Length: 352
Image (cartoon, rainbow, N blue to C red):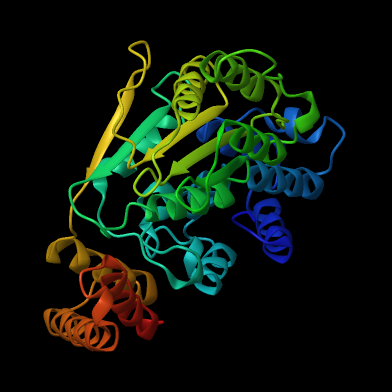
């Protein structure tokens, strides 16, 4: 999935061709968002409509469609066709959807889920997209059920919106992964024939792991510009074997020196090898301010401006009522942040 679907690409390309109707205008548009001149993207013999379509298509495939949408909205804000497009597609209007500039700041995920608060982890994840920054993130908490796994949902969301991020998630508590099962699973996920994996033979598990980790990273199938995110979760009910720990160390070391892999470790409190510089995030319970900020953002997205004091109080009252109702219905989950997310998501859904 990407930012625009086929019909939206065609519609927006037609508008770009109409309001940037010569080569100088198109080139200026691209240079304003740090993209190559139009001839590099569309070819020197392309017509203006064909060039505009290629520009929009490439932006959608390569993850810079948001920058293109914003540039057109600002640069041709007085044009009636541009105004009509953003009125018809409010999710593309940065005034209604400020997260369009930075998907890591989004509050709304797929399936009606919300991602609230977590400003620190959002910053770390965005920094990890730059190859020169740290590529390993360890997420822990002092409290159970506060939403660590929602990090995976955020990475999935941004990955789908930018098309070239692929996420592999493994819950090591879900079933007993020994070194062989884990390496085979990763090989299958990354397009590697498991039969080609280094064999253990007479080696100890730790030495075998030191061979497996770099092999997996070096041989994973990659499209040009792709980044692979590996999320390893669990580490609560099943303690990883010495071999699996060594594999995690090896993956972290190898990923550190590559441009196209990222590693997220949930609940993993072991120290990684000293050469690996990691980001660390401790998840804390959501505050009422963070929940309120999410509801304000949702109102802005739906109506184009922030809620009045009266509207905001109504949203918070509804949220608290729904939360108490969920706690009565599911007392076994009364301390889980899932109920907080469900209650807030109900309020957001009713705004739309």
